[in-house]
Length: 95
Image (tube, rainbow, N blue to C red; front, side, top):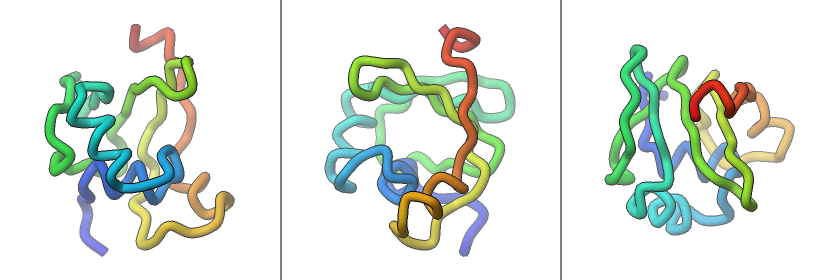
């Protein structure tokens, strides 16, 4: 497994979206913000790569979700496996 992974693949494997196409659409529509090395930016392309330590902010079911990428997923496994890929952060700190 490489040290970086496409954002659409990561969101799918971490079970934030049901399909990779839905993840691509979320990113393409500007719905995801990435903080990499302390520099925040709004993502526009699903090919942008994330690494462990990056933070993400996006809306899900009407709520802001802020997470830290802890690991990269090798597959879309069970929920417990997906939960190990991230840790939750305080969304208010991003807004």
